Length: 306
Image (cartoon, rainbow, N blue to C red; front, side, top):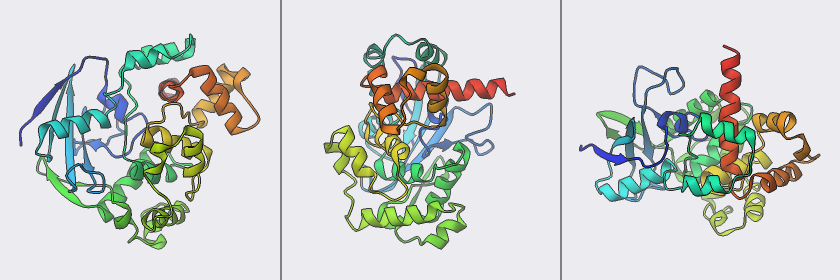
């Protein structure tokens, strides 16, 4: 299988992007190292479910970064189709300079961007995003990744890339075969109920997974909150990472700390009011600003505690 190259024209860091807690479908291509060990390898692979694959078959992509070059290969035979998908998944089709031009003069955000200039907000397919963030409640990043890997291995289809067996995230119909007890055995805990009920809503067409693409941000947020286990924060994560609503700004623990410590004037008594104040401050790409702040504050505190 031929290795292709893609030359980067803007700052990009593959490891930072894929290990910043935004996406759980990529895993390290180094069998000897976990995706979350340090130092981390700079090569990753992922499966693509037939549900979202351009070929309607399970596929896989491998990518490795060498300075300003991405080396990649895929089971997808058409190079252009595979490269377009890779660029999409890694968020490389976003105009970073244009996005930065929408940000306000903000010292903490500027410091976050300068420290992690290679960070991108990756794009993901809606269904794995929905399930991933339903599973994210009160969970650390490595545990969420483990859950998604377990779901893929048990219920998803597989293909071979680099002589390795890669499991794709299950489609809604595949995951609907799982019952709550089985999911609890995979360590999903109380989230198992939410996953089974949400999957059944989608399979039974009581929730149109493509509908949010045609909706405004507020209407889309209200719509995805019809899913089980989806509150305000999880809804914002789903809209940002699964549907490309860049104004969506999830108020997780780190962003709440940022509000308390750096933006107390933007704090409001209710989630949606604080979210609105932050969107007004950071602009139409508030969710991308959030990604920089989240990773900067999380890694800075980790550094201070080591």
